[in-house]
Length: 95
Image 1 (cartoon, helix red, strand yellow):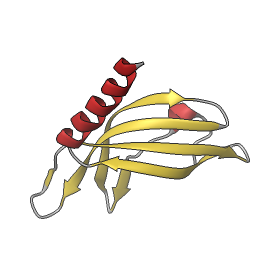
Image 2 (cartoon, one colour):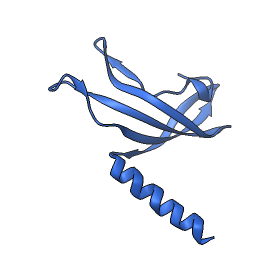
Image 3 (tube, helix red, strand yellow):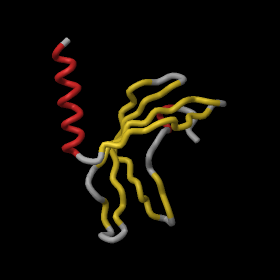
Image 4 (cartoon, helix red, strand yellow):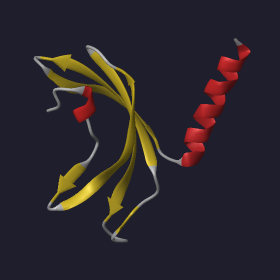
C-alpha cells in the first residue's frame, strides 16, 4: 500500500503483463483524504495491444499510515471526458 499520495498508482501487473498501464496522473487534493485522476490504458489480450485511453478519478483515505481507496469514477472514453469538461466549464462560467 502507498504511504504517500505520490506513490498511488493504477498500474497493475498480472502474470508478468502490465494489464493496466498508468500514463499520467494529477493529484487534485492531498491530506487525510486524497483525490487523484489517472490516465491509463488496459491490455487487450485478444488483440495483444493496449486499448484506448481511459480516465479514472479515485478517492483515498489515509488509515494507519497507508492510503486505501474509498471510491472511484471511471471515464470510459475521450468523448465522455470532453462532455464532463464541458459541463464543468459551463457551470464555472455561470458563476
